[in-house]
Length: 220
Picture 1 (tube, rainbow, N blue to C red):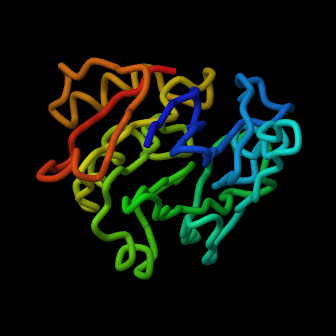
Picture 2 (cartoon, rainbow, N blue to C red):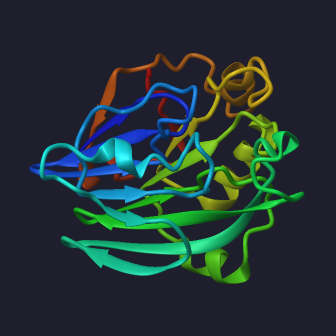
């Protein structure tokens, strides 16, 4: 499995000929749009920075879009979505209220459990989510604050969920949508200030055996 970070909350996950996109920006966003075809696209929050399903169409390759809570199975990938809350960018009236619906996803893929927290805005996960989000191999966690988890909250939740590896995200968003210095603050919270960013993560389940909360920073 190869995981590539494209900035914001956008990730490309590939295994063989199968490609999954997480929270790709739309054409209306000022974030850089992805330029690859996907088989499956997961959208955690209906905001232009994360809902660019149309940007993951390439040629005849049109992705299956998952955009909310529920259970799904597509091309051997099992996905469960759990409702949660976010306040991301609500000051700009993007969601028409004080809080928006964010979906936390559990993705069972190649024998690994990937958990993507999306634009999660607080630590109040549902009892169902906390019960089901177990034995996590890789946790993708927002750390930028501004309506999403900040560095301290992100670290607390990562400790609670006990993943084998933690990938921070959402720390390079434009001003007003991210707190300055978020990555540095998170690494300090996690005692991982010496971590060196890597271009992409190539990983198998056996590579994570025995690990506890290892922080992996991916370059965008």
